Image (cartoon, rainbow, N blue to C red; front, side, top):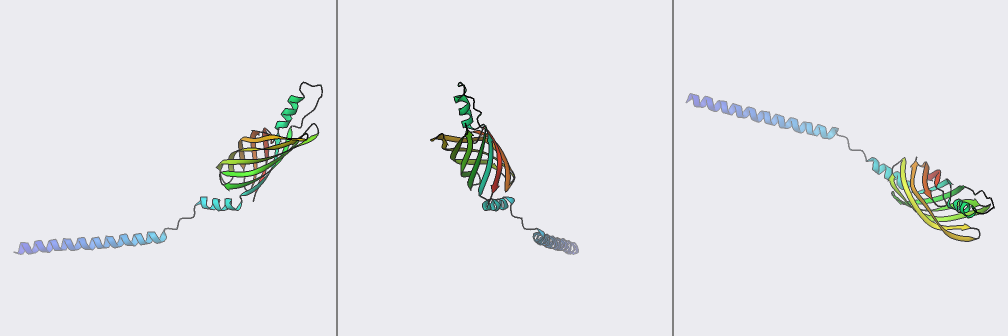
Length: 195
């Protein structure tokens, strides 16, 4: 009988010790959880949100461009190549562009190009669509295509401006360089102001 009582006493003491240890461990775990919850800072807003807000403020842009080897210069060279008349075509074109980004990847705008051929002014007006397939805060890569009219020697003719590949650096004032074709030139560079 005494052995049974000792055995019961031992079992009860072990069970009591386990309960005490479990309650203590549970309390410690809950305390650590509360401390961790209180000390964990709230996650900061993503940089994408900040960049999107900044982009929303500056969707308009104007650009001033200098291009080399516009299309009309090549026409002038070919037209007068076989004649005795010597004319030095203007191999430089000056352009102004306005753009509005309807989305971060897509921009619509208007280009106005100016050059001279045989001392006569040549002006083209070309609406364009621009695709910014890489659009970061300080770097962009883009292509664009535009179709409009060139006014030359008393007439109006179809003109297409295209950029096969362009690189833009900076924000909100950026420098860019592009290669393409049309009246803007085969190689062009300029400054862009976003607002």
